Length: 139
Image (tube, rainbow, N blue to C red; front, side):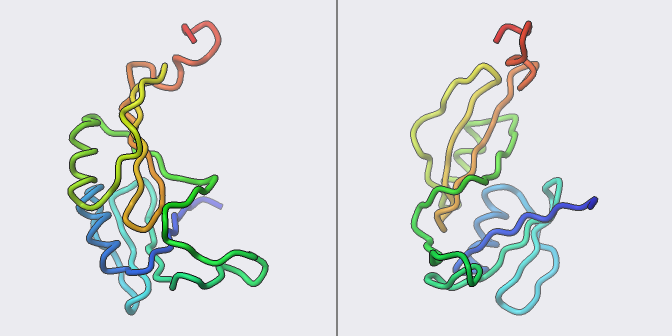
């Protein structure tokens, strides 16, 4: 396996394209009907998949899609050079900032959610980034 694609379920693909292009600077790629849009400009393509709230992702999922704010063990972290500028752009596009900016040994972190309940973070790294947390590196 040599390729990664990120898939994000959303209830409204057109609205999601508008959000992710404005908030993150992504560009529309291919489009298939109304229920799938590809976004480009990240290190890997992002596919927005139009799925109705209340439907199940798989027959064995046991839970229905819910587009209220939800927790998932997988989320996207977006490194940025200007944290406040990135937050402002995302909020203008419809994101919600969850709490304030947090200082961490590796840099500054902002937790947000998109208009569809999916969480993501902006990271503004300090020099050394995650390496500052390794043994012998001051953390």
